[in-house]
Figure 1 (cartoon, one colour):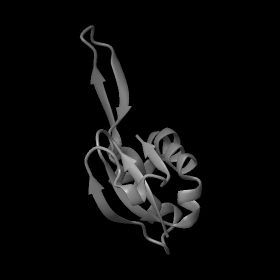
Figure 2 (tube, rainbow, N blue to C red):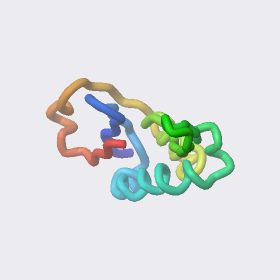
Figure 3 (cartoon, rainbow, N blue to C red):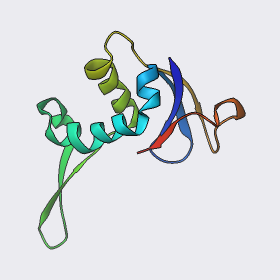
Amino acid sequence: MKHVILSCGSGGFLYAVPDEAAERLSEYCMEFCTDWLWNSPHAEQYRRTRRNPDGTAFAYVSYTEADFIAWLNRWKFPSQPSYLAGRFDGDAPEPYRGCPRFDF
């Protein structure tokens, strides 16, 4: 297990994930948010529709880094569950500054 930093805004969350997920973090994150969330029947709970002021509708997805971790645990690495190892505001603490990072 290796540490990664994930965020959906300011600060971040430190997670321990399987080595392969850490080494290919961007690939896994992009698969999750550009493919699985939009196309999997298991991801319908994350899909939303909103109307513009002119009445036209647009679709979007709503999720957090914890949803990404749940996806890793259920669909990609069920025998190597990832877990939250810490949270921080601002910059990552010194020992973790070199960890792979993805900002959703």
